[in-house]
Length: 224
Ligand code: GRF
Image 1 (cartoon, protein in one colour):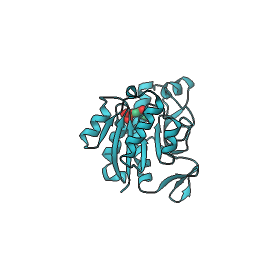
Image 2 (tube, rainbow, N blue to C red; image 1 turned 45 degrees about the horizontal axis):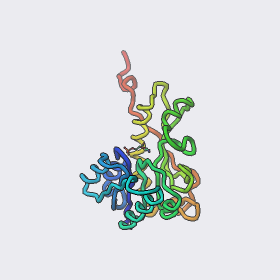
Image 3 (spheres, helix red, strand yellow; image 1 turned 180 degrees about the horizontal axis):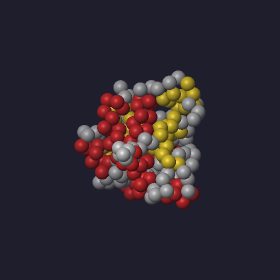
Image 4 (spheres, helix red, strand yellow; image 1 turned 90 degrees about the vertical axis):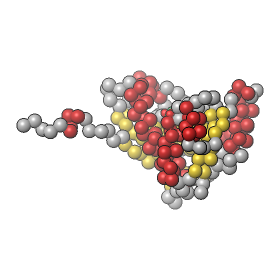
């Protein structure tokens, strides 16, 4: 059975979605590593009986030293796949190279739109009609590797940063376990700059549309 390692920085609801997938994940979670101490994500790993570590950037003289130590720690677990699930630190080129072709990131926008931070606010400021989240392979370009799976929603006039963040998270909890399953079960790979899914090239991401619960108006019996 293949196994993934998961990098986290905070609340860890996406880690929880991987844990909750159970056997449907298609493989195991070998280890969880956080760059922040005391975060909920580490407690989720603890509760699930998964090996977990905190590695503090403050204990290292440079980013390169930290990333080298992080790679060594992860190598101890021989992961087939590295999953960045809300990991809020940029990884240096040597690290990205080390895990090339076997690292997936979750980013809260419809990439290539809005790489970087504050995606929900930027979507609102631009007046975009749609938003979502993307699982993509990691390359040296920040949030720039090829997209595999996206969750797409329509932005409502009443949406706020908080409401968009909540709606996007619902979708992330669907697309991240699914993409990890594809990889761990051998359906998904990234070789020579080409994403492959089920034996064929995947040149545009799969898209899952948000399904919203029916509004109360729609469920009310018609007036007589
Ligand atoms: C997710 O929205 C992810 O896309 C972003 O940070 C959030 C992490 O949430 N990078 P959680 O820690 O998994 O709850």
